[in-house]
Length: 418
Image 1 (tube, one colour):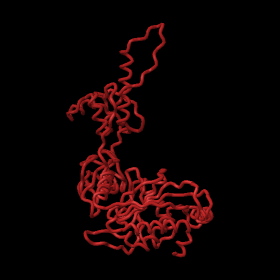
Image 2 (spheres, rainbow, N blue to C red):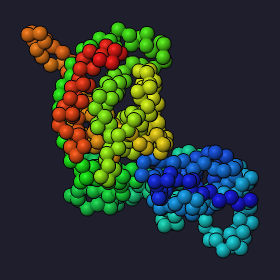
Image 3 (cartoon, one colour):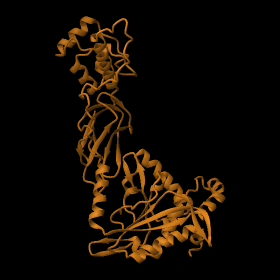
Image 4 (cartoon, rainbow, N blue to C red):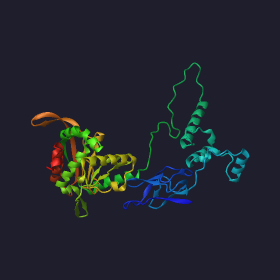
């Protein structure tokens, strides 16, 4: 029975998607719920599972194709077993030739080529190769096996035609191989299309620069109090909650206290209206293999330090696997971006529209500072608050950043809400 494999329903704000990678090829067996293909939207990569056990008969939308919800991607033959190419007995020579002639196929086609994918079959046909003569690296002949065979054959041909060196002269050192497709002295270039996520990142960053009046204010924070508190309780914290006590949870809590005092930083502009949000959904910028993503911590004012650390760890793991859902990336009233993990000392972060502010964290560096009239060495971090000057005045922005600084330098303030 033939079954259509369709594009799943896309989020309301997403019009279409791009086919990224097929994990199965026509003729291969699939199991129910096994991932067949990845499709990419503006924010996330979605997996399309097999609806039933069977064999993938035909792919209708190849890599790079633009698709919409409910569009047919492939045809699956349900309840059909994949052909066992390796275990099938080889037909007699006369029968094989007769079958090939009756089917209109050339008699020179190798039986080993019948279990390969379209790309491999195309290479075999273009170069007139016999699949049985090519060494196989795994269970079946792959495109890499064919390319390696062609490279070895070209190298052997070059050695055969090269003149032999004189007997009295030592052989010259082997020269670095030059790709056949590039002339000598050429400088390599590689052109690849932008992913949907990278395109969306570019659009939103340009949008923020064009629509908001972005200004950045700076301050520095002494993290000795947070470090001492963490060093004192990190082992007991991990034993009690099953997660490490990091620094991000302290910054998130400090931001929430500052957002409560300065509600305009937690607000956004909608046309000629200012929307004040009565909740605190904080985005945490995370680097993923496909680009920067900002998963959202919902209602962080109701979360404990352990809840925040667990949520951040889970989001980081999902970002690496490309498993973040659209719901986890949508919304947010304020964002934190920690460039310090990559070694950044100072930066001016760009707003994440329609939010009105973003806090940039940087590398913690021991520096000499003056405390109570004495020069001491303290772990210092520069903080940068970029904000939309259309809604936030400089006074509120500076005081907001000072509130974060004071909360982190004396963590007891967050417990006492001072």
